[in-house]
Image (cartoon, rainbow over all chains, first blue to last red; front, side, top):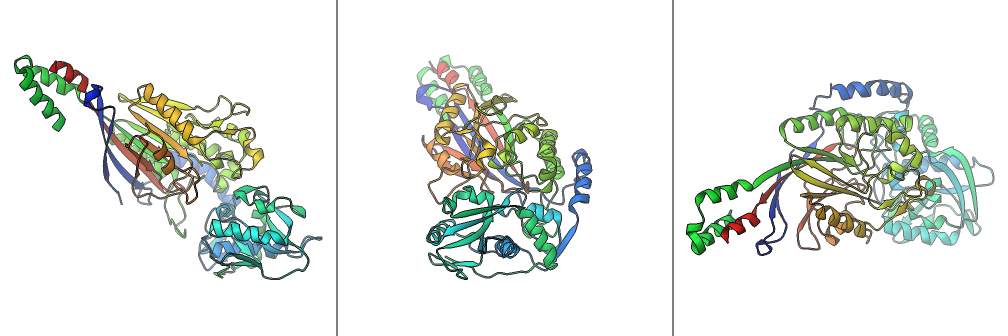
Length: 234
Length: 300
């Protein structure tokens, strides 16, 4: 599919100024990089040793997937899987905290999980960043800040909570004035401007990488659990 | 053509006998068409291999070796080709986690990239990590609105560059997205972010003054936002002198460049070709310099 287009741009001053005038004719194409293009060339030979080394390291099959997991806003199966994985992994696993919700960022999920075998490499593509998991205790009045954030962003991966027309709800109430959220150090440190994490009541750094959580949960599930639950209703 | 006809007519009326046909022929020959082809990518994100055939969105697309084939085909048919990238070369596949951007730089060098700008993810392994990988890049990084003076990157990027190819003088500068809140503070260190509009205007004016035929802005600001955040569309509108903005960051798939009217009422093209190297952008420019000044002298 080549889209051809023509434009004419004029630069320089007009005739009256007696300066030189240029006429620029533009032709634009979008060239898709498809499988019909031969790739047996010197570039491929250059990649080959890196590829085989990585394949050995990243080719391990962790699980199977009967579905394509795609991220989306406000909701997506990949959003739900990632947030669920995080919440399930940390629920009751760290003493001194009881996370009842997980929050990630849609932008941070970097790849789809495709139907078929799920490899270690696929999880690296999903979560290439070395983000550490952080447990954060927040005052309950921050729920309205989270609600406001989601109303603007249009949706982020959440588990253990839902959003409905401007309001954010925890699915279960742990009682008291605070609640524990499990998230990434990137978001906790102000990434994507989630300022509601500022001045938390308490923080626990887990030293666990988010990617390692995904790897563990994928393995444990064997067949990835699919949920297209509508957790965010804008 | 109409304009040339007009001049000829006027000349004949005012001083026909002074203007011999041979003089006109000379005037015509001064009107020379120069051609340049811009090939571009953005947000390749360490996608060295094509996506797998079972990929949910882009099955079997992309791949650096295939991109090389396409680039070589264009180089074989077109006279003057420039290959540019709008940033976010790093991060996205295990190639990056494992080789820390070195393979990306090596391959872009082999593909013959002429220049790139830095995206936010190019800071992901810190400034020193970027510098380490950059040793393998034979092409310049053009960053105009990041002041790296107080970082180890000082002097290792360029605020602008002029590349002359086949008689076409192409002026390049680069603008990046605000890093605070997007990249962890310790990764970009003392990098100072400068206003993209002011910076772009400054360098577009400078490049024009230096006689560039074509002024290209490599941008990692993003195509457009619902908020009032600075974007390529806003930048195009708020400045003058830029002919083309090659954008990135928002992973926007454009079928064709967007036309934006700039501050001076002149059309600017804004393009972006998605991400992961699933497309290669191609824009051909034919620049016809009409020696109007000389023609006018003949008239007198």
